[in-house]
Structure formats: structure tokens, C-alpha cells
Amino acid sequence: MRFLLDENFPLQLQRRLTEAGLESEHIITLGRRGMPDSEIVARLAAEDDLVFVTQDTEFEDVELGVAKVIISRVPQSLPVRARVEIWFTALQTFLIERPAGQLFDLFPTGEIVGWEIRRIDTSDASDDPGT
Image (tube, rainbow, N blue to C red; front, side):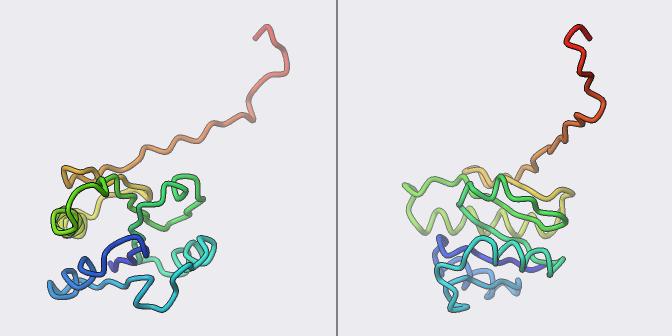
């Protein structure tokens, strides 16, 4: 499993992951600053082992297929060093535990929690308002 870090993460996080032997890429070091979300989603769809780590909540609404996305809820008001430590530890744990699911929140505690995505089946809905 590899991580793709969005441009809104400090480069120190990628360096820390790499130094620990974890595979990661950063949008900025790829020379793709400003990369459209549609291109990120296409890459995620094409690479099964890639996990996108972002702070952008618009990825909550993206149809992911088999892709994995972790949305960080760690406040920007924390010092960079503290945020990097939280993210680093959480991502290490994520690799060890390999939780099922596609969309995850990463909380300030370092806990990563999967979303329970429920699909509503409206095909059985009746047109009769009395039912």
C-alpha cells in the first residue's frame, strides 16, 4: 500500500514516511500542484494499492469505487511538528491494520475511522402515498 499526499500537507510528512521505509508521493514533488480532483480520482481508480490522504472535504462526495481516501480532521492551528507526528503515527497504524472500507476520517487523536456508507434503494418505493 502506498500513500499519495495532497498538496495541503507539509513536505515534512512525506520525508518522514520515506525515511521510515513507507512508500509515499506528494502532489507537489510530483510537479502537479493544482492537480484537478478528477485526475486524482482517475489515478486512484487505476492504482489499487494507492491511498489518497487529503484535508479536502469535497472528497467526501466522490464516487470512489475501490479507491481509499483518508480525510484529515487534524486542525491547522496545531504546530506543523505536532500535525506531522499525528499523521505519521496514524498512517503507520493504518498500514498495519489495513481496515476495510474506502473513505476514512483521521481525527486529531490520530485515530482513523472508516465511514459507514449506506446506499438507499429507491427501486422498491411505491408511488402510492398511503403506503
